[in-house]
Structures are given as structure tokens and as C-alpha cells.
View 1 (tube, helix red, strand yellow):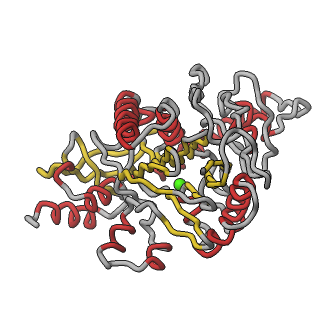
View 2: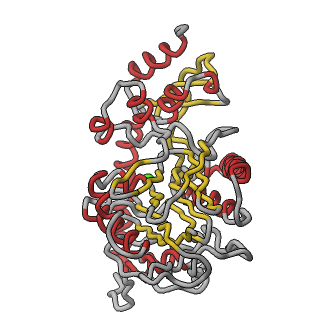
Length: 427
Ligand code: CA
């Protein structure tokens, strides 16, 4: 009889200011979602996906997972279309449900699942990424892909298209197996060899999860890093295994972005898979426990804050606001403001001059177009305008070209025109 125990860890990393990863690690349901989008949109997307997953019933199978993925796609897309601040958001999803001695996995994007068995580690998901497709087509080696400038472009995501097709498959487990689900903040920072070594170390999945995150940080922590670790152990019922391998880690669903929403921990009336009990599934659980969140990496872990909105209190803490600061005289303030205004005017002028020299390819109302400016909006004002719309539907492009268009890479006008004309040429 196989019993599954789990552990999980997430970290902001050493470079990013926000953790846009979300995860679920609860009895029989595991997931890692890596959000993308401006401002806090990525976090909203990854978390929305996890929230839908936690509503799955125990023992959910392939069809339930497929439906959850479809629902998550719709929910994220509708929110991104309805709210300008969330426009274009999306998320990866690598999810697994357990039923007896096997996992059923759903995969969209470039987060990964690995199986460690008998000392070797195998990636069991396929990345839906530009470089992975180029590897499959023989255009890149894995080594070249690891350092490719476009390695973060994904070709499938939740929320970015009207529909999405997940890879769904079963993974039969044996006693002794270990499964990792992770975001690219782990797989992109730590070599396969080291992943395999750490995956096989330790006696408890939480130990392995913590060690994997520590390794990603040691190698630079360039991205948010999240990992869920599952051990298949001998046994049944709720008793911890003799080796202490029962999961004791709190493995809450992810922190909600919206403090008015209440988290919906998954009811688990048929819980028999391990002895862990999510003891922290409130809004602050993940961040406070992991000591990450929005604070800079050197900020001490935040204590749970009542009414914590995921941003304000941590910023205040990290700034260490001092009330003893000397108050400047009014004259100093006026002179200071005049100088600041002049500096801002100069900077703004320089910015406008720069902004008029850059272009990017994107879409407007479903048609491919060349835009002048940068692909951002600031306080509701677009920093770009379409200069040429061509009669090419974005939907009609293959995934490679869609990814190129979606990348919104800054180019010169000539480069943009060349690309866009290439699209019009019959292939
Ligand atoms: Ca990532």
C-alpha cells in the first residue's frame, strides 16, 4: 500500500520584488503555478488557478483536472479582459491529483514535474516553451536553451487565449518514488545533476523542498522559486511512517491577493493519504511562514499582520520608518520642489524622446500591428500607439510566431517592419 506525504517551499528569490508563484500542497492534490503579467497581475493569475484546483474533490481524475484547467483559463482570461491592470496576465500550471498508487498530472507552460526513482531523476512533463519546441525541432541543444535569451517565453499558458489544451497523463508510483513539482525558478537555476542529488537526499519531503529552494538561492535566485515534493512511502492510514516521513509541514493553499476573499481550503473528508494537516491556510500563511512576499530579500520575515493586504505592512516594515527625522523648513521644501520639478521635466522630455525611437510588434483587436513606444501603460496612459496594422490575424499564426508577437520585444522600426511583412508573405 502506498501512502503519499508531501512538503513544499516557496521563496521570492534574490532579484524579484514579488512572488508570482503559487502552490497547492494538500492531501492528494499538488500544484505549482508560475504567474506572469505586469505589476501584481502574475500573482493574481497563479493564485486564481490554485483556488480553482483546491475545489476539486478528493480522488479527482483526468476529466476533473481538464475541467479545472478550462475553468481556470476562463476565469483568468475574463479578469484580465475586464481589468486593465490585469491585462495580459497568465500562469503556468503543473498539477497532480492522487488516486491510489498513481498521480494524474495536468501541464500547461514551463513549470515542471520530475520523478526521482532509484537514484535517477526524470522530467515527466514537457515544457510548453519556445526553447523546448526549438529543441524538439532540432534547432537548439538543451545547453543552448539554458542560456537562450528567449528561454522564458512560453507557448501555452492559462488566461492568455480563449482556450487552452493541457497535457494530461497518469504517472504510476512505486514505494520509494519521489516527485517534484517546481517553477522555472528552480529548474532554471539548478542543474539536473544537483536536482537529482537533492531529490534523493533527506528523509522528509519538507527537508528536500527546503534544500531545493536553498540550492536555487545559492545559484543566484534570479526568479521566484517554488517546489512541492511528494514521497511515495509504504503504509496506510494516518499514522506517520516509522522513519518520521509523515508530512508535518503546513501546506496551505496560496495567499489570496484580495484580502476580502476568504481562502477556501479543500474539504478532505476522505483524507487517508498522510497525516499532515494544513494548519495555516489564512491569507498570511504562506508569506509569513516562508518569510518572502513582497519585501526585499534582506527583509526579516514578516509576522502575520491583521488585515495584511500583501504589500503595505511589509513595505513599512522594510523601510523602518523613523519618526525622529528632522522636519525641513518651508523654504527648503519649496526650493527642493522646484529643483525636483525641473529634474522631472528633463527626465520626462528625455523619456519621451527615447520612447519615440522604439517599436514593438503586438496586436490590436486581434490583428498584428507595429507599435511605436514601449508596451506599457502608466496611470492609464498608453506609452505606445499603433503605426501600422496588417491584415494578419494573431489567431491564425502558429504558436512560435504568436510567442514572438506576444514577447513585445523592443525593436527598431526597420526590424519591426521586416518582421511584420514576413508575416504577410504566404508561408
Ligand atoms: Ca518563473
